[in-house]
Structure formats: structure tokens, C-alpha cells
Amino acid sequence: MGSDTLISQLSSLGLTQSEARAYVSLVRLGRSPARAIHEDSGIPRSKVYEALSDLEEKGYIKTAMGVKPVQFIATGVEAVIGDLEEKALHCSGEAKRMLKALETSRVEKPEEFAWALQGRDQVIMGIRGAIERAKEFIVAATAAPDILGPLRVPLGAAKKRGLRVELYTTSMGAASVSELSHYIDVKQVAPSSDLLVKSMAEVLDVPSFGVPDFRPDQLMVMVIDGKESVGVFRPGANSQTPWSLHITSPLVVMFQWQVVQTVLASVERLSQEFK
Image 1 (cartoon, rainbow, N blue to C red):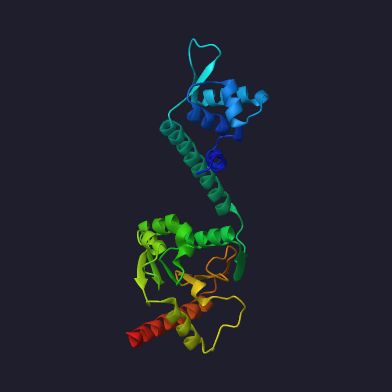
Image 2 (cartoon, rainbow, N blue to C red; image 1 turned 135 degrees about the vertical axis):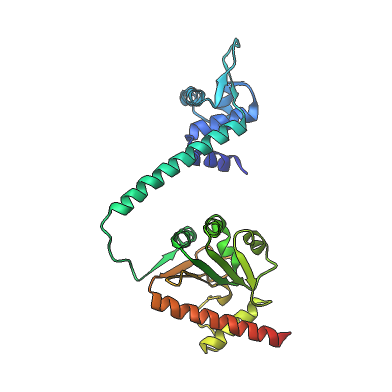
């Protein structure tokens, strides 16, 4: 992990940029005067004492006694990170409680029938929201299970809530599947993504998928409680700009899931033929 990444991680836990830089420098250098911390961290000389004072007030550093010039010592990493994590968890819990109270008190408006999201972070957050709304089951089908990698925690939480959480995939040997198997029940439906593409063409009765750069093996369909569906589309395996389509019409979702089940049945049949 690079220094900038480390500073960013500490900042996300609640330290200011200057506090994070000063603490990292002290951990790296050991007991040091403010001048050495200034030179190592790049904190302006006029702000380094302010950062050190703030860290000392938090208990994350301490002043060495009887030493001239004044020197500072970093509190142990485990203690500091533990304290930051507890504070972040408390803040997130309080924020969630207050936001849920606001959500409950508002006048409800009719939900949208469908909406689309574009971009990796937006897509991931959209799927996460759908997972957290689930009450009974979550079923996903994809030949590219790495799509679900960033969602291991909410998927695991859904399973702990007693929901049925399943993934149908062609990529049983993939590292991403090995990681996901701790959070979701994984089932193999075909030995290769080529069979999936062939099955989709057969079921949908199209000789080819004519959308430029569209990769059927990079598609994911997720159905939540039979009431909501999420389709994720990626132009290629390495694409960083996926987009997703969310639908909340039970009738449309039911039709989509029937198509998915038909494709899975076609895959199973073709798999038997290829044996």
C-alpha cells in the first residue's frame, strides 16, 4: 500500500490529512521532534504543531518527557486503529438511525417502475440497495461472478438474516467464485461461458447479439423476492463502465425470471450433449 493510499484510508476513518500524515511519519520514524515530522510528512511548518497537538489530544501520540527539543512518540497502531474503527462504527450507526427516522417520517411517493445506473460505483451501490431490501431470497445468474466481488459483505449479511442467497455460474474454478462461496450458495450450470452464449441465442431465437461490443457472458441478472430485478451489462471483461437496469414491476420481473430459468435449462441440456 502506497503512502498516499494509507493517508487516504486514515482520513476515511476520521483523521484530517495533516493528522494522518503526522501519525504515519511518527510510526515510520519512531520518536521524533516536530522538525523531523515536518520534513518527512510534508506538512507545512506552520501546521505541524497544530496537527501534533490534535493527535495528542486524541491520545494517538504523546510527548516524551525531559527531552530537548520536544519529541513525540506514536501510540501503538492497534490501539489507534481500534479507536478509529469504534468511532467510525458509532458514527455510522447514529447516522443510519437518524436517516431511517427521516425515511420513515416522510410522505411516501410511488416508486419508479424502472431506472438505470452507469459507472462501477453507482452500479455496485444500486445492487447493494437491492440486496438490503431483500426479505426472502436473492438469486443471481452470471458467467462473470467477479461482478459480485465488492458485495460479499451485504450478501453474507443477507444469508445471516435467513434469506436464500444463490449464484448460478459457469465459472466454478474462478478465484472470485472461491471467495464468494463463503457468502453465497454457488451452483455450476455449465462448464464454459460459450455454452451460456449459445443457450441465450437459442432461447431468444437470435443468431447473434448485434449490439457492438456486447458480451452476453458479461451479463448478470439478479432477482430479489420475485419483486425486483437487476440486470448488469458490461461491454467486455475488463470494462470499468458497467451499467445496470433496475425493474420493480412484479409482472415484468416474473417474466424475466422465467427467461433466466429457461436459459439455465437450455444450458443444462447442451451441457449433457457436450459430455
